[in-house]
Length: 156
Image (cartoon, rainbow, N blue to C red; front, side):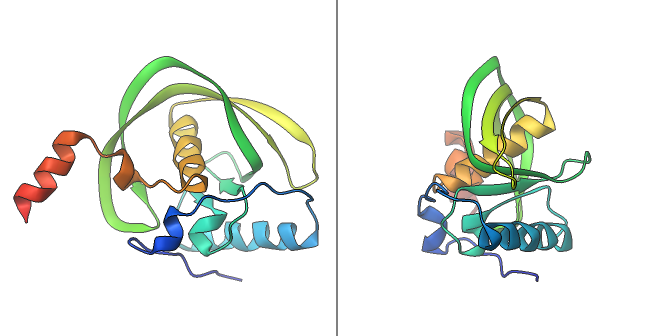
């Protein structure tokens, strides 16, 4: 089922998602629906709170097949920061240059409750950082640089 995506400035997007205690049929159905929603909207990542569910679940597909991260946490950040252009399904039509860590190490569980760790760099790293931000109530708009914010005000 395709789920409606919350759009900025919906206040729901500012809420922090809660840890998943048990991974059951409800969570697996949500994951299936999130993947369908992400693909239908041509996204590469989606967080549960973007579809109105306050659970720490994200789905990602950066061209290597779908990946599911339940209760993801960043364990390491390294390689310095790099600027990349990012879009967001909750902020339609906006692409911003965002500074993020080049490489991260993430720990999470999959839909079978198996814990795993993943080292990510480049696009997978940026995507995971953006989706984890969503779980913490942050969007790419919150990551805009001072100069980007100033330019937005000048343009108005």
